[in-house]
Length: 93
Image 1 (tube, helix red, strand yellow):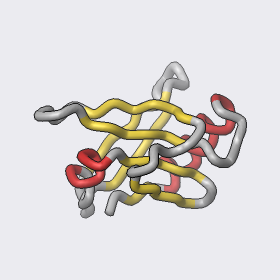
Image 2: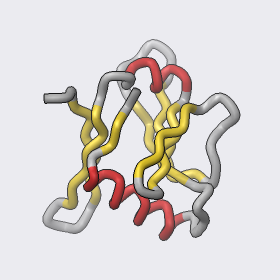
Image 3: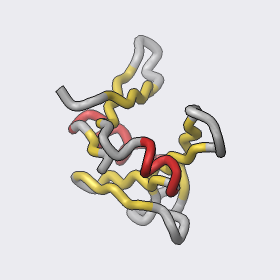
């Protein structure tokens, strides 16, 4: 199952609260058919079949294909020099 670092949790929670303004919202990660690319969107609620990952009030919703592809990954995040959020998906150490 995908896990989140503390930094990712803080930034997901902040982005969601600013964009959606509800605790039901979260970051949704989806994957198009036959591709290794992922789409990330802020949404007000998960889709019915989404896997929900929560940490310290931050919610990430994984579309079914993305959940399978990211099952052994860690979601991390950082702010760049322009205060833009950059997410990364890594393997556990």
